[in-house]
Length: 143
Image 1 (cartoon, helix red, strand yellow):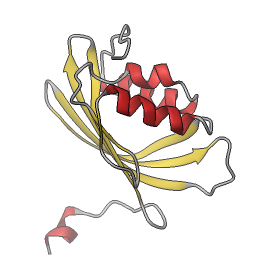
Image 2: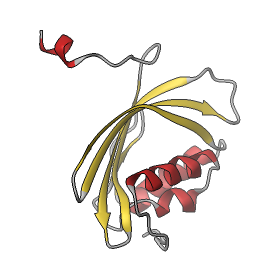
Image 3: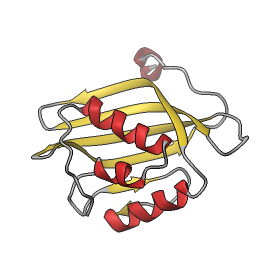
C-alpha cells in the first residue's frame, strides 16, 4: 500500500499531484494519490487491466524506466458529487527522453473522497488515433 501521508483537499489538487509526479518519474508521488483500497484499477493505453497496488506500482516502474512523461490535460469534462468525481480529459503527451511526436490519450480518472482526502480509484487511458478530437456537441450525437 502507498504511504498516503498527504491529504488532498480538492480533486484538482489530487489530479495536479498525479500529473506532476508522472512528469518527474516520481513513483512514490504517483502512488501517493491512489486510494488505499486494493480494488483500485489502472488501464494504460493498449495494456490489460491492472488491479491493486502492486500491479499498478509495477506498471509505473516500467513506464518510468524511460524517464518522465509530460502530460497536459485538456478538454476536461467533470461529473462530481460529494464523494465521487469522474474526470474525462484528453492528455497531450510528450516523453522527456524520446523524440516521439506528441500523442493524445483519452483518459478517465475516477476519484473518491476518503478520510485522507481525494484519491484516485481508477485511471483508464487509451490512445486517440490521429489528431486530438474536438468536443462533439451532444446534439450531433443524438441525431
